[in-house]
Image (cartoon, rainbow, N blue to C red; front, top):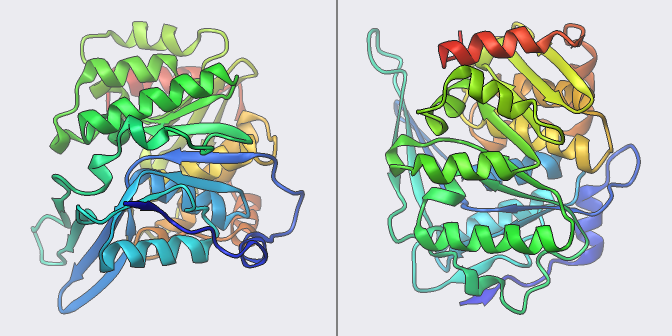
Length: 349
């Protein structure tokens, strides 16, 4: 087990170079990275997946400073993931290569037969390297140095007890250093998540990014009114996504709704992570207000769904900027009713 070697500084900076101001600090994404194998008839494709890693890639694609914490296996899939993340500009120097465990994998099976399930997922992640991330991995580490925010996910909190413990330790260290904490909720029924754990991190995070379904699942015993009161607490920032309809944000600066453009969707896998990564990049690396960050997130997601593959579909900053300019106008102070409607139904339209 060892830490991944630091990539050449000049190469890393060249990979990150994009138009605009220099990003400030580092966005640290803590959690699982997975290999994604897509089966589409006779065609196969190998790509990168895992929600924390996906959001980190989206941030890096926009020119941001993104760092990934966790473990990958010391196997061909792990080496492929590391190479792909480096090439995107993600800092993998604090990732741990676990030679005693395999890299997690999921198969994304597409079906174009009439009446068939359009896509199905099969996971191989039990006892994977990513699930073995643990609190000791943060000992004697500068992983949270010069950080603008720490990002955890619902999968980080539920893939294993040790991963959850490591995440809580990272959160405690971030709090001690006055570093904001963001959570991408990502409720995954296959992991049998503990709703109490997810609701706890949802309440304590400074920024919560969730779909309407995630929020309903994380707070199964809460009424819509109670959830709505939670997100209106001072200092709490909520981004609520509703699939192809768009997304809304509510914060101390007010609320806003960003409708999504009508685009031909080819593959929606990873689109939510693209939105989250772009939103957090705009908030913490470009100091944009929540409403403008929301527009960047929706723009990135709208491009992601038009291409196949998870991170391979993610746009760069110039593509996203062009898409941002063509979005429907932001609707300031128009989100509260919209948020309430979707939370009452507990689903996207």
